[in-house]
Structures are given as C-alpha cells and as structure tokens.
Length: 90
Image (cartoon, rainbow, N blue to C red; front, side, top):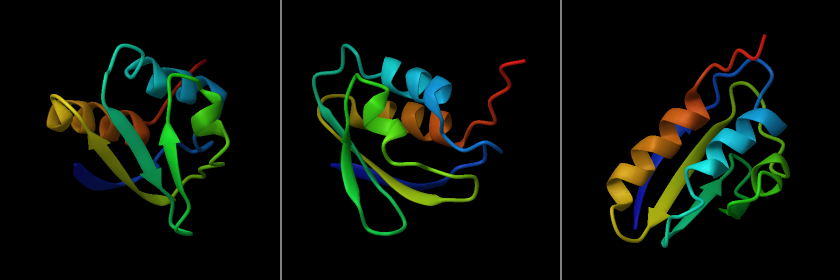
C-alpha cells in the first residue's frame, strides 16, 4: 500500500461534481483506495461518488490518500491530483 498527504484546494470543497471525477478514475481499477480525513475517519473510495461526498471534505482539509493494488503509485498520483484540484464548473 502506498499513501500520500494532500490538501483540498477547491474553494467549495469536494462536492458531488468533483466526487464524480474522483471516483471515475476508480471504475475499472481492481485495487482499493482509501481516504483518511483529518479527524481520523477512514473510508474506502468506491466507484460511487457518494463514497466521497459522504466525507464532507472542505477547503483546506488535509487528508491521507492510500492505494493498494496493481499500479498503485500511478493511481495514487491520479487521485491526489484530483483531490487537490481547483474545479471550475462555470
């Protein structure tokens, strides 16, 4: 398992639309991915956006992203980029 700490940079936090982008990268991934929030709560990220929305991640939250499975480093990098991205849906 590999892990990395990341900060939520999106001004509106990680709401439904960014959650969809984040979980889309896991749809065909055979491994597992987890988020550990600053409060210590650990949750598995699944292909459902609700698995991320339920974490109620806000701007400035620091989280640990963990990935286990084949090509874990590449998937970790992709997930961390998505969690730290500033989304603009205008």
